[in-house]
Image 1 (cartoon, rainbow, N blue to C red):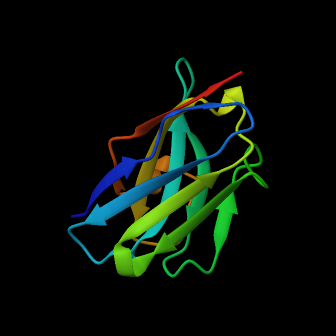
Image 2 (cartoon, rainbow, N blue to C red):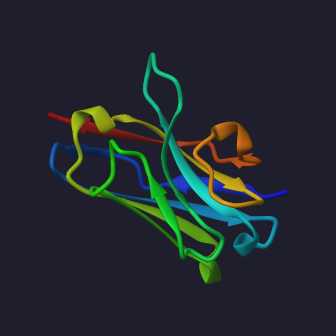
Amino acid sequence: QVQLAESGGGLVQAGGSLRLSCAASGRTFSSYAMGWFRQAPGKEREFVAAISLMGTMTDYADSVKGRYTISRDNAKNTVYLQMNSLKPEDTASYYCAARASSRSRYSDEYNYWGQGTQVTVSS
C-alpha cells in the first residue's frame, strides 16, 4: 500500500510555469514507476507523463512534449512535474499515480492514486 499526495497547483497566466509535487508514503518509493494524468471538466482522464523506477526513462503525451518535464527524487519519495509555457487547454485536475511495474500510458494499469491538484491557466 502506498499513499500519494499532490501539491503545487494554482492559477497562472498563459505562458507561465508551475511545478507540481507528489509525495509518496507507505512503501518503498523506488519500487514504483510513476505517472501524471489530468482530467478537465467534460473530458476523460488523459495521460500526461510517466517515469521509470530509477528515473532513467520518461514518456510524455504529444500535447505536453517539450513543455513539461517529469522527474523524481527517490531519497525524498517525491515525483515532480515541471510545467512551462502553459496554455489554457492545460487547465485540469492533475493526478499522480504509482505502478509496481514499468512505465505505462494506461490509467487502469496504475495501482495507486493521489487526490489531485487543480491547475488553471488563464488567457
